[in-house]
Image (cartoon, rainbow, N blue to C red; front, side, top):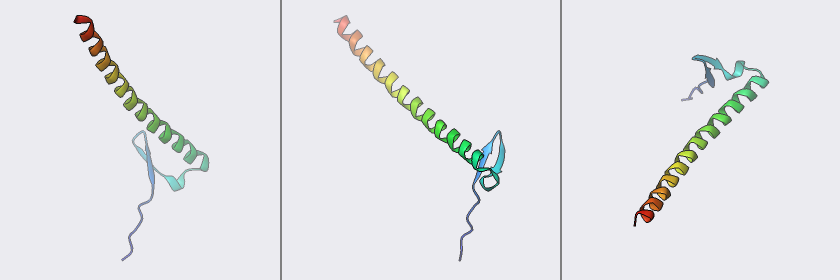
Length: 67
């Protein structure tokens, strides 16, 4: 039994495109957009951690000043 491989697609503005139909330049642009989206998500995650840490330490500072 051989498994059929599903053709790779990319969805842009709710329209699906076959990667095999894209030019080399378009594939490169898709890769840039994908990589930048991953970096954006990572930065949002890091910012959330930083804000949480800042709030934690601010709480400790306020607590020490109240004593």
